[in-house]
Image (cartoon, rainbow, N blue to C red; front, side, top):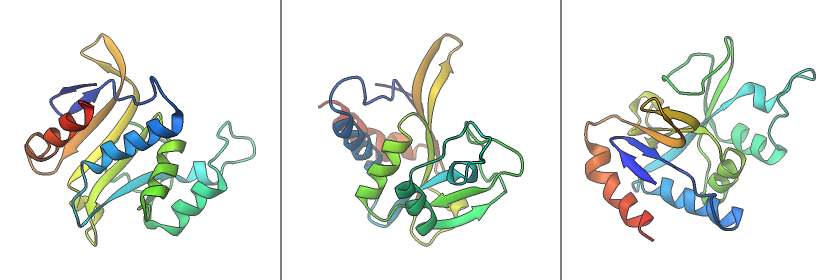
Length: 174
């Protein structure tokens, strides 16, 4: 992994080891962004929850569907943020906050290639996020390198560099 400004290149925990261990490592990484009163809020597209019969989309497992539906804090057709993978006109977006680490692990297992989530203080509106994290599978960086990356949008300038980057650097040393 390499940190360039607010982008983490080669953001991949799956190069070696058992898949479950790699997922747990990625969740541990995401926890670096959390404070005592914050949570991860993920985005899911309605087409993944209710795929059409003639669609190429296979949908998510019933376990994930349950996590999304039971923990939805906002369902909207409005594109709230400029996300790398937002798609579809007239698409319903579900923003949901998994209740615990086990649910976060299940979400990451499902979306290990790409996902979008917010780091949000509990009780705040989505627009009041601290960080927007956008994991991208095939990001072309500087017109030549294609890599998996985590793009980090911060609400407060330099908060990633000051508050989060040291935690991440400590974590990836081991």
